[in-house]
Image (cartoon, rainbow, N blue to C red; front, side, top):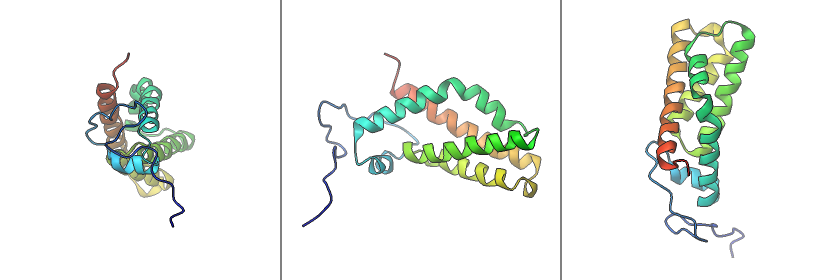
Length: 144
């Protein structure tokens, strides 16, 4: 006898009137849904919340990640933002953003081992993957 509960909402079988997820290029919806006990409604809400939180900040974050940190405090702030995106990108199932955030986060923890060009390259990669994810989500979840 198994002590595990069946998934709340198996993939491909929307329950309780929850619409099927839209196509999300670049997203690993299977991995994300696994983290969320296959709850499509929760996943959709998480994606919409991510979009709502980060879309207004995209230009600011792009500017920050693609410029060189001017102080140790600024670098610490950027490292925390990258660390946050590392976790969130795993939750929403965006492997490219996760990889870019992991690299920036690691580099920011040991800045003396990286030159300015590397920081700009890592920051640009993170900003680009964030923009790509937000563009996909905007298309998938247009404003009502």
